[in-house]
Image 1 (tube, helix red, strand yellow):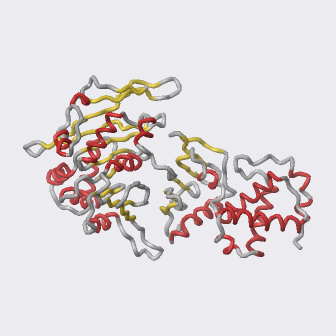
Image 2 (tube, rainbow, N blue to C red; image 1 turned 45 degrees about the horizontal axis):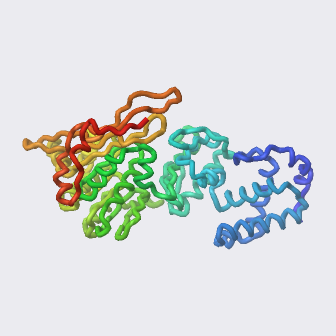
Image 3 (cartoon, helix red, strand yellow; image 1 turned 30 degrees about the vertical axis):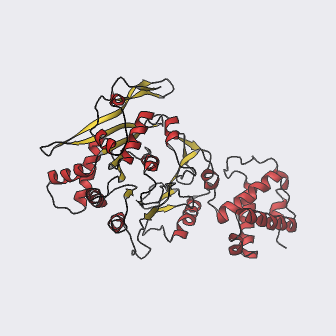
Length: 452
């Protein structure tokens, strides 16, 4: 029987220790018990067999084993502390430690770890520092290892940065020293269990019903769409929503760096890029996947995000019969988006004059949707624009709908409204070919939907 003197001396202290409601490691007695019983579980049980059980069965079995150990060692703690003890053992043995309750909180959209004692979360578009910490940097590294190891990836001094994905699809990026100057840094973009629908965006005032109908018509009439925006502006969510307008009889192929899209429709196939393995081999790039996609008879190709030379292959697909394709790019305005795509084509090794590259881009793309996250945390579609080709080969970008800011309230909320610009898009003629009728009055500047 294991020695219990260290625990017996502290029994009377247990009830006076602050309860750990925020999952912070302040209850030192529970800390010691967690480490002690984790060691006993590793030593005295078949932990691999435990991990094969369902979550409920595993919790019940671990609770039985810990209760047995505590009975043998004559350790008595409150029911509350025992619940914390078992949850901690589960989270740290087969879960993600202090991250577990954050990952399970549906109100949290992002988790940012700046070293072992500073954790921020994003709720409702705003970052806040929370009362959660790790024991030390090794504890953070242990959690990161638990995330990346099942995916065949690693993080160490020779490879100090890693991208991974949690089982629920949430994206994870981790950076360690010597690249990081603040210990282990972790960023987790959480995966929403229920995909957004257009009605959600209308409820959030992300866009108006007129803009939503226009975007649905754009997708149904097989125009090529580029969604532009900064980090966290909602580009992927917007792509996922407007892609639901694709008619059910079409074959859709999605290509992503990290799988996030969930199109609730038949005949959708997806491909995901793969980084090099620990030997530096086996990488499958987005560009390779786009090239391969052309051999798979897709009606539509959706690329989650273009970042490099794959932009040229995506444009080539758009220019060779794969109409109605959609992709996203990091950019702050429609014109900036075109310049970014142009730079990516150059990265693909295309030794062409800039005006030829620009003509190629303009010939492929039809509509640019600009998304932005405002300073109050809200996300807006701040413009929907049409790329107009002139007879002399030049082009212009015409805004169809825009969001106009008018001010800010005392509590920091952005005030403004969505409005058509008065420009009647040329694509209305194409809409008619597909049996879609949107009245020209929809684009009048008098047709204004207020968003306070």
